[in-house]
Length: 249
Image 1 (tube, rainbow, N blue to C red):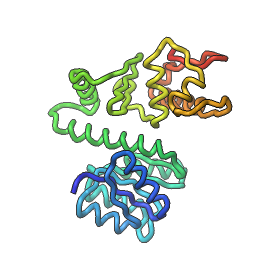
Image 2: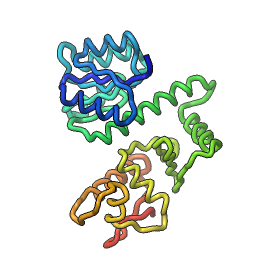
Image 3: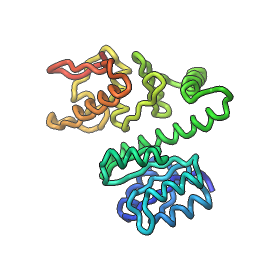
């Protein structure tokens, strides 16, 4: 059996929604509707990643997470739950979860986070095979390899984007963006001296006519800024040109 993503979700509608989303994005998947069923799949053929609902019938998601990591430590696990408590998130991340999404979540964000944990898993496995090479050094080596292969790379200050595999880094730290956040930042970085109006950004990224009332562009710009600030709090990357739009600073 080839690599696949395991969906462990007891809500049939959500499970089906995730499966259709994975299929549209080119992922193979297997559906499970209980913790016991999920673990049977993990034991018979470990998935590369699990999208794990925390509230599963018969077996708590926390126990399922623990047993997945015991059975297949290299399998990435994204936990999904309506629980927003910071303590719960920290506990699960310490227990081995690779990421945590609060329900209801944005489908684009799920795909972005899934891609991120898969890239991280691959890099960590490959880094282990490189004697004396840390994950940070491997990221640098991976970037150099991409450069040698002639893959397209965008650079602005210490932000590096690799559009061919939809990844981005600030220095050596990966920048996790949704698809639309990525496309907005890519457009700005491709034209660092140009001011883009909300109209420009909306029509380029959403491929729809901008009606002048949608706040989506402002929200996405704010999200990008917040994510950049977490990695480089002292740096400003995106400038607001009042009354006009946005550009790279």
